Image 1 (spheres, rainbow, N blue to C red):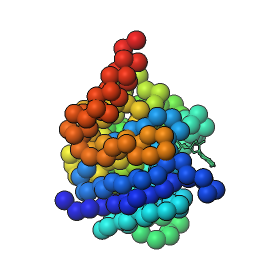
Image 2: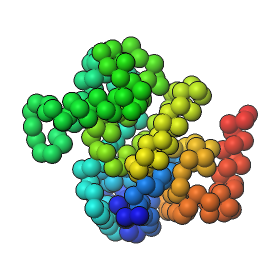
Image 3: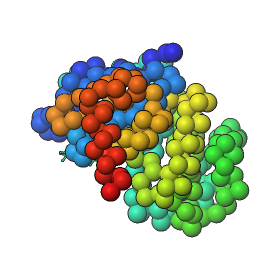
Image 4: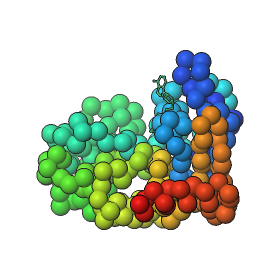
Amino acid sequence: MGKQIECKNCTLGYEGVAVTEGINFTVSSGDYLCILGENGSGKSTLIKALLGLKPVMSGEIEWAESKQGEIGYLPQQTLVQRDFPASVREIVMSGCLGKGGFHPFYRKEDKELADKTMTQLGIKDLEKRCYRELSGGQQQRVLLARALCAAGKILLLDEPVTGLDPKAQNDLYELIASLNKGGITIIMVSHDIHAAVRYASHVLHIGSKKQLFFGTKEKYVNSRLGQSFILTEGGEENE
Ligand SMILES: Nc1ncnc2c1ncn2[C@@H]1O[C@H](COP(=O)(O)OP(=O)(O)OP(=O)(O)O)[C@@H](O)[C@H]1O
């Protein structure tokens, strides 16, 4: 499998102050990487670095074959976004803007890609509906379709199931897993250890100040760190 991203001994931080260091991991085509870590450990900062929005303080992020611009990003939803007054089709199509250089109008291939993606994600029948009238789960599908139109190779998802009920969470996880089975690389930031254990191929666990683990999911669940995280997080969920 081709290597897509390699993060080499990166230090991430703001204004000369490191948030986390010693970040080392590799993402290959078809991987499903789950990034775990407590609040404030630097997960969002790492996302910004992966998207090229923020330079690393030291170390290097190396991109192979697919370029940085080919990463589709599903941000954490904000309330403002939930109220966005545009149709489903318009939102999905907007993912095509900026693809293949600047072009101010949608091209035929953009429209075809939007149609194909909406069908794939089961939202074609919603295309004329206004985004803000949809359920949270439907809205996430729309944003996922948009991210897929922006980049068909790697999807970077930041807490994608936040705010969804358990059934919608499960449906979205299953949809993401099916995209991964279809060959799309997934990088997902999550607090949900259960989803990581169920779906991911690899785990990156960031602690306060430094990386605690990177490796296959199987190694993670058998490690002392993985075991204790599963126990504490599982305990919280069952309370
Ligand atoms: N723009 C900024 N300037 C300075 N410090 C920042 C900035 N953004 C974040 N930080 C600090 O960097 C640290 C890591 O933040 P980050 O948002 O990356 O954590 P996180 O792991 O994504 O947390 P959460 O799980 O709560 O989303 C925090 O201590 C935060 O206060």
